[in-house]
Image 1 (cartoon, rainbow, N blue to C red):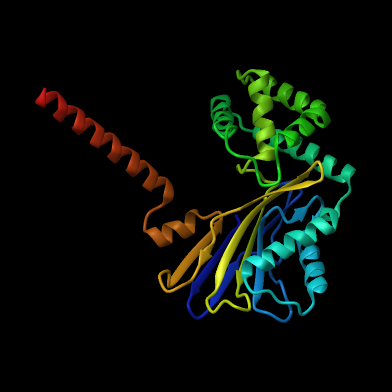
Image 2 (image 1 turned 180 degrees about the vertical axis):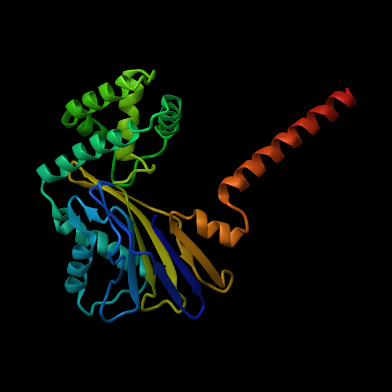
Amino acid sequence: MTAIVGVLNKHAVAIAADSAVTLGGGRKVLNSANKLFALSKYHPVAIAIFGNAELVGTPWEIIIKEFRKNIGNQSFNTLQEYANCFFQFLKRENYYCNDFEALQQLKESIISFVQKIINISDVNKLEFILQQYETCCKHPYLDGLSDESVEFINVNLDNELKVSINLLKQKGIKLDDNHLRNILKTILTKDVLNPDLTGLVFSGYGELEIYPSIIHYTVGNVINGTLAFKQQPSVIIDKQNRSSICPFAQTDVMCTLLDGIAPKVQSIYIKTLLKTFDTVISSLSNLIQ
């Protein structure tokens, strides 16, 4: 389990995290890792990571320390500018990988994902999970990606896609090859549940900011020389939003504490309530007619 929580108000921001990190797209878990780092030695800015602890095989801890060394005592007016500078630094450093390493990581991501889900013994459950991923095929690409990125995957990962589809077929999956191929490409190009994704949480103050904020990114693989990432909704403290508690990663326990009800129970409750409303409305409509 991975859990990070940020607490903000007008006076300060505090970030806490557990010590478990995932390496190699979920193939290994360390339980004594550091996930909180100062982004600058001289200014009140921090970064937390969750999910995959590496970017194409390079630990995020090393990348963050190199960035910290690179910017020295340089400061920025806003936290967003710190985040922008961090991603510009990654691009200048070619994301700490060459083309061959990036392609190998993509291949490993596909095979690793399939090997994990085919361990699910219930074929109906496995097919249901794949269908949920299929609903994400129409979602927008992660930032920086395009149809060209998908074509790059089609051409360079054709063998891995075919092998993965055959493994799924052997499990008794009834979806056709095109559907399965689209699902596997979605794993790499869309903002969906994927052990290779990393969460980056920037927190602190820019030079011109009197209140703290938190900026959250999801970061994926490097596809055809482009880093796949997406900026998630930010949390900014101001006179209207005086405080906030922000859970990240596996949020079920934190949401239970904050909301007083487990997310799954809440979901069942809402669905049942809506179904009851529909039944009552239908009954009233029949009576009126």
